[in-house]
Image 1 (tube, rainbow over the protein chains, first blue to last red):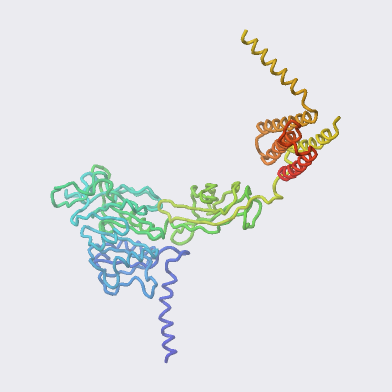
Image 2: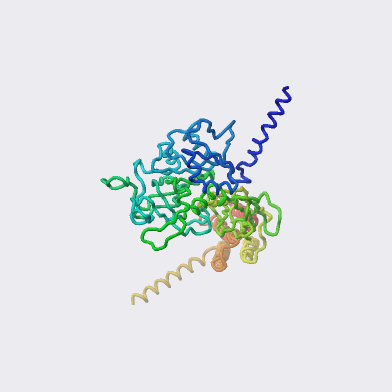
Length: 438
Length: 116
């Protein structure tokens, strides 16, 4: 009986093990299991194009209502999901054990988060955002209004439907293909915390935008104005967790995906807004399909030798190489750039060299060890906008010449040798003359 | 007028110095020549270093210091064997010469080690 129970337990754990093997790992850094929290299930159909694009890229989406009492991010200390999509702007408190602290812990553990707020964003959502370095406008009724870069529609409206095209200049975040049509945005604006260097605006408002309640008269100047307003921001934490925060939930929706857009003052009428391209490309970045680097096979050796020595001598010529790969979503592809640098470092860099690449992921250079001995490090500190940061350090001691390694009988020094010997000869001669004169 | 008198004074000074030096004992004159030889060699080396650069700096230092050391030791010997110097009247010149030889041996031992 007990044996049958054990067998049953073993069998039932198989799907769970299979689930774990698909999980986020350094060898396979793309998220697989995504928890989607919704205000109500109508969002699942109104945003189906977005969710479908994620599912066709292999993500396993688990839709739950945000107040579902069975929500759990982790079980037995293991996270059940690799990423979280919060499409629940109005939720006041999550169901189950989930709260803002648990979500931030989830991010601290290296997992990714997509958060969409809206005009009715709750304090909980604002709190999570502000912990990530993004401060939504405190006025609950405020929306982003722009009287010059709004999207033209049949009804004149209140100019809260914005056609945004102030994108960040980064191919790794927005994809190699340029986003031609403006992105439709209707929602609240935020400012990014200046003390937080990890958060950056990827879609900012135009200089004429401001954040205020569109239904009431402006009695005081708005607190958020111009391009200081960020519409969509991203964060890359130091543990390489990625977060996307948007002030609009509807920009992910099917209606904005399909609708055409004409920016006010422009004669070009785009058949399709830039939303689909923009949110799909940014989701690729957030889920580590782009810009996730790894460095392997750090090697160094003396020129014309193959083995790695345990110590270098001053003025040795050495060769250094490292392989850098970028995760493409399915495999590790060679990373090609011309700005990777290595430092030969002891308190400060004695040598700083830009590495050459063979376009197949191998970066290499050669240099002469400086005329200083001590404990050095080979350091690669690579931080580039949108890419995960690489920080490699390998320690290596450098010794001075041994006493029998110094050069001897240098031609230049012959006069000095001559002078020394002539002083000895002079001493001998002087002694003879001094002792035996007259 | 003033210039010619200055020249005359200088000539008179040199003449008196030369006649005073002529009365110096021969052994002191030998030491003086030896010191001049050492200083001359040192100056040549410094000039040479100014031309070719300071690369084997230890060799340069030992070359110049052997000259300077030789000159200093010779001057010390001269002070001790000078009959007119009452400070060392109890010190026999043989003893002074033995000290000089010992110091020279030590000096050249160090120079040989540092020459490279």
